Image (cartoon, rainbow, N blue to C red; front, side, top):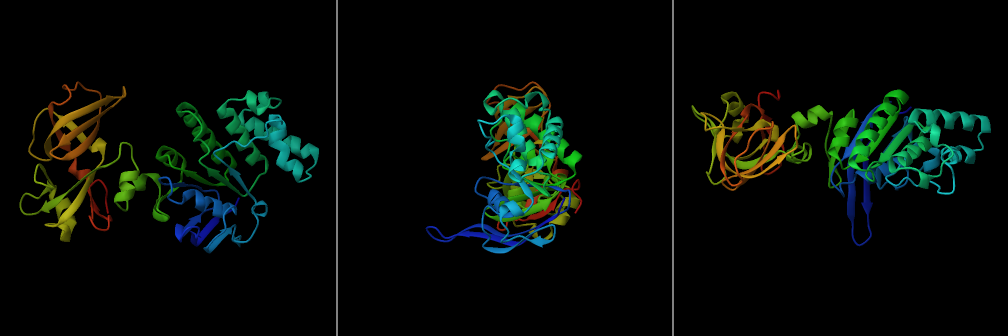
Amino acid sequence: MASVTLEGVRKIYHEGGEHVAVAGVDLEVADGEFVVLVGPSGCGKSTTLRMIAGLESISAGTVKIDGRVVNHVPPKLRDIAMVFQSYALYPHMTVRENLGFALKLRNMPRAEIDERVSAAAATLGLENYLDRRPRQLSGGQRQRVALGRAIVRQPKVFLFDEPLSNLDAQMRVSMRREIARLHQELAVTMIYVTHDQVEAMTLGDRIVVMEKGHVMQIDTPLNLYERPKNRFVAGFIGNPAMNFATGTVVGGDEPRFIAEGGGWQTALPRRLASRLGPASGGTVIMGVRPEDVSVVPDARNGATIEARLDLAESLGNEVFVYARADEQDIVARVSPQPMPPLGSPITLAIDMERAHFFDPTSGERITSGASHPE
């Protein structure tokens, strides 16, 4: 096992003009920690992973593995194992031969190769498939073989580059459990890249959210969800995404948030309004998660707004309600309940105790509701 440290790591491409793919990443991955890099396509997460692996040169900064600077160390000498989106198995070899091939190249004794292959096969439930070839396996089984090839090497660090992207939804859930179990059993350092926030939230001890080559926030899954540092993180983490509305905070005896255009407004808890401080009277962006919006029978004194029902998606255990209030789209995540015909007026209640407020210029979070202590 080993720690991984990135200090001011940058990657700049000069083809067709200068393009900064990764801009100064600072990251400390502890020994045995599971860290996930997540973000939209093109954010620099895979490039960062490849620089750790040695598959991409580093334009600036330092990468350390177990305290040793590895900027110019070839990939094969970094004592890492990488699992890619593509299984990249040798089609003419059996599962047993695929698992042991890297060890064979190292001229490892046959008995030790067999012992490691058998142990990896048992860990991944591949004992009955050792004599099959890749074409005789399902996608999930092939991905297990790819994991097994990494396990038999017993590296200090495991690197995963979107390994589940080629699998169907049900198989992704199964493989997520498999990877989480492996991390617990092996107690080894793992760095995992994905664009899927569900994978990030369920696997990572900590998550690194990236956008356009920059690190937006590094935190635990719960803190990312409850206390996003800025609007980007708030909008990226969570499905359906957080609702946002631009408007003005008005103080006084009855503080309230008035949406842009004045079409609707909601009451603000006084303790939340007081924490907004200098933002009162100016333009702010309010964010509220869909589960903090509910459908109510009628208007109440407080944070309710009138809207039009555009769509109701029933998932059995919950319903996603898509509505429009004035010129603002709003999504609510509610328990199963009867809904009026599409286009009907509905009343939405917002739990303002859980609302977030962001600066419209910088996007930084100004404050959160009482359920998110500062």
